[in-house]
Length: 274
Ligand SMILES: Cc1cc2nc3c(=O)[nH]c(=O)nc-3n(C[C@H](O)[C@H](O)[C@H](O)COP(=O)(O)O)c2cc1C
Image (cartoon, rainbow, N blue to C red; front, top):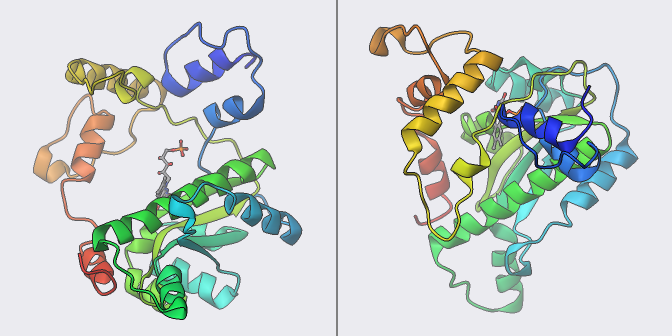
């Protein structure tokens, strides 16, 4: 039985720790350590008042320069939800999700404010794309946290950027507004496995970036993860061969070995001069 934060840490990283041994598995840290993305939903609707409160919570995040450069699209129309599912057929969990949202970067609003008040908009273009992206990602993260605190579960969907033109047209996203990620929201139908993370010593650096132990750390992580949840199938076997020990690093390096979303840059360049 999970009793302390140390137990949750062990489940998250696959390594025992004394950290949090004396703290019960409660509160926000416990909830975050126990996070899982879900892809199956209980047959239970999400109350609209709760949803509106979750939006309010998500909109309470810090925002770059107080600019609030994001927009959340709640895709409620069943015809549109079906269309999203049709455009991303490999992810059945989208069609079934009780709620489907698209978190967007919004560089339009501030440009319109400038027009309204008769000022120039002179921000550098890449930065003016990057800031809304960060704001939208933070808003989605805040929504996830708030939702999980209410017993809901979620699955982010970056795959909305695959058919990005179709999705944007369907949602009537104007110039300078672009999808960052979708988010399925619902109640859990089952408890998926905790996805093991690389340990904090790999991800958190003190005073200087240091990956001197890179290979040993990746090998160690592969081994811990293979013990807990071995990869079920190997990618790109024809190109890279079949391996006896096929770990996370094999899987992820093969995953990124071909182009993904080649059309996204062009889509963004229709709005931003980058
Ligand atoms: C920005 C972002 C985009 C994601 N896109 C997808 C997606 O398109 N489809 C999907 O099934 N999961 C998606 N995920 C979920 C990740 O696969 C998941 O977070 C990761 O495997 C770790 O699992 P965990 O969230 O259960 O810890 C996405 C997550 C993030 C943060």
